[in-house]
Length: 358
Ligand SMILES: Cc1ncc(COP(=O)(O)O)c(C=O)c1O
Image (cartoon, helix red, strand yellow):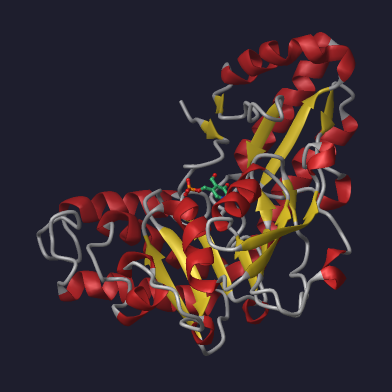
């Protein structure tokens, strides 16, 4: 029976990625060896790493002067590495959710942190506006979280901040075009839009590194990984291979412009139903709604039906829509590999639920 997978991460991978990765686990690039059991220094694996980096550059139209890295430790290690490598005395953080808060707290180990804006007053249901003009010109960088996976909010454009801009794009990288030239550093855990967990993708502007005196452990220094082409130590070979297949698939589909169109269609179908169906309501401010993580609750009158709705959708093989405990209700994650068909099944379940219980 076909499952409709709405998990927030790890999340659905395309059939293309799964099929080719499964094949490479038994016979990788015609070697007769598994991609799990061949040296990362082999010519075949080196080609996987190099091609992955090249496709990232192509898909995101990354200008000269940036390096692309495949690292370990997830996005959470990047909370620390970003500050370790780029924070001199002060940095400014925009606090838009639990992940942004974690990034900010980690950076406090390395310098003074200004929380330049926050949407905590309304349970992070919106993206703060107008803070850009308050950025101090001497601050090392401003950190934003472009898509807030838990609360379902998303920046709709790349902010202009006048100082280096650092972004956690874990849950929306490759879902839309990004003007990389505006950023000093972009990072993303792979397990939503790039591949399996175990890899973090990092895009870093080379000339911002090594600017001030701070001893940095080798593994946490971006320069180590740049110099060694993401092969300073043994990379997670299977995960990187699966990322390459996902990136190839993005290229086949027409790149980030086409992916944005697909994401908009899926998200709009769900938001239309949320707005039409009086049993449900969205939790994110309308202009900041994410097209990756669609969050909603049962409206006040029907609140007690939330567990019943979860059972109702489970019977239709809809999985992973229980909301994060800090928001409650439901979250339908619609990353690039989400199928339009699954979104239609969820929309139909919502309208059938209305017919049955309203
Ligand atoms: C926006 C965002 N940042 C960071 C993380 C943490 O990622 P990781 O588990 O790869 O450390 C997540 C995980 O869901 C996330 O959604």
